[in-house]
Length: 302
Image (cartoon, rainbow, N blue to C red; front, top):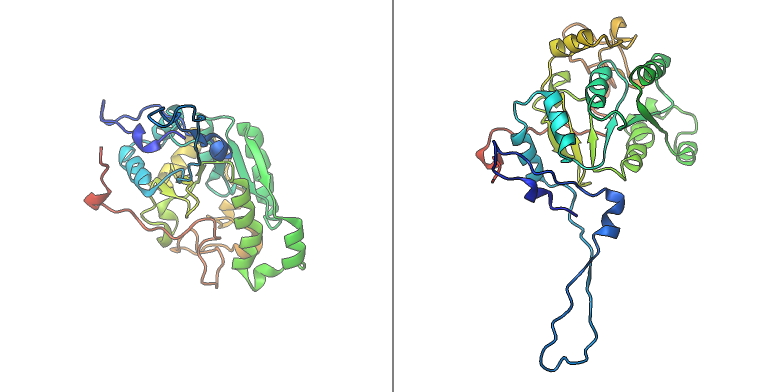
């Protein structure tokens, strides 16, 4: 596996070398390396050549990689950052994870201008608004998306949510069955997922970095729109004549599954209508943001 960290070099404003990461599905097979034949020395005549198998179990990305990427692309336009990481092959096998929510069209349009065939993973929980499913189909046709519907395991649904009402008494468990586990399985063969999260969406997303680790999986999360504002999104919608989610005009600035999504009141966070009344702010596929900050220790060591 190519050493991602060695791809950084100080040349022409700290540009990256064009290193290509191996796909996770090939990692164990291709990381098996053969050591050089042991030298023949005194007392070793006639000794059979020996090889040593070694499996590279290092994570695909580390926190040091995240810091370098965030520093490299700090202040760069989102479209330029997307073009750069794909053009230089810096993030490996990649998929977009989209909810086809109120702002999803912006990310989908921006990324597919550079990578038109990128898989777009949609968590088909079985609990979406009909308007969301119609919007998904409209954007898929309009943008020519490579849509992948990701569904829960039917046996687990039958065992743990037979009535379909788990959301009403255990929303965390419902999200685990319908979102977290299916997405983790779907992302097995990917190095990076691209999300449409933005820092302004809620207090728990303020300080969202453009790049971050995906828990302890060794995968990377790329958030191209992390520092975008509502005005920037509106301007992009208008500039590219993108259709809006039909529920946005009805008071739903953040749209998830229908049982756990309510209208947002004036002055509330855009995500205040999600899991209203519960001590819950994320479905489980994302965590509360811990900003990297401006600590000099986070500067890249080039």
